[in-house]
Amino acid sequence: MEPTVIQITKGVLTAAVGFSMIAWPRITVGLLVTFFGVFAFVDGAANIVLGAQRDESGDRGWSTLFQGVVGVVAAVVIIRWPVIAALALLVVISLWALVTGVLETMTGIRKAREGGWLPLLTGMLSVLLGVVLLTFGRPGLPWDWALPGRISLVTVVGAFVITRGLAQVAAAAGVGSSHGHRVAH
Image 1 (cartoon, rainbow, N blue to C red):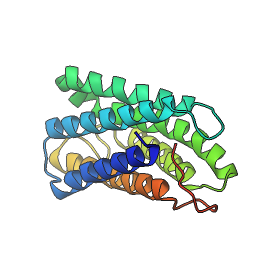
Image 2: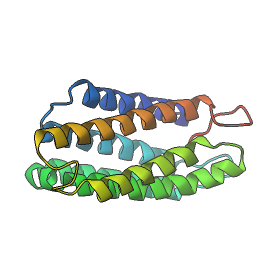
Image 3: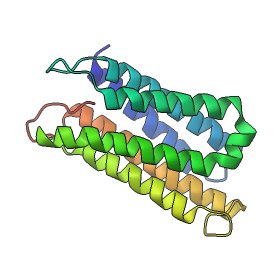
């Protein structure tokens, strides 16, 4: 399958998950677990396919491939143990955001040398989300597990997921590339 099609599909599905999260902010933690599990699986599977393909220089995207494996493993854990995942959701999302953000930033640095800046930006935003959730998401702080805290968590993560999905579509369309060609990873 063409990498641009995979990237656009991944971005549209990602944004749809984010819009769903914001449209229904009073969703249960269980539904958030399911949404995030599906998102991590779709994102991970797409990154495995993208990372396994060779780019124009004949190289494989090893960081993208590894990012995909991390996403699929996270999805399996979330779906297999949803109660435990619900209790650890904040940590799982935070660590996922940090790891994939660092890996995407690595890809973004390489793409920035070629004139593409969007993967670098989305990677840095992912790292920022991980740090914010780890810093402020502990019980007793603004986002405790009471209903207002859960709504805040859903809104923050949903906004990030929408931003990431739209950035993925934009990158596939060539936005963020000074050379006018697509920036897929």
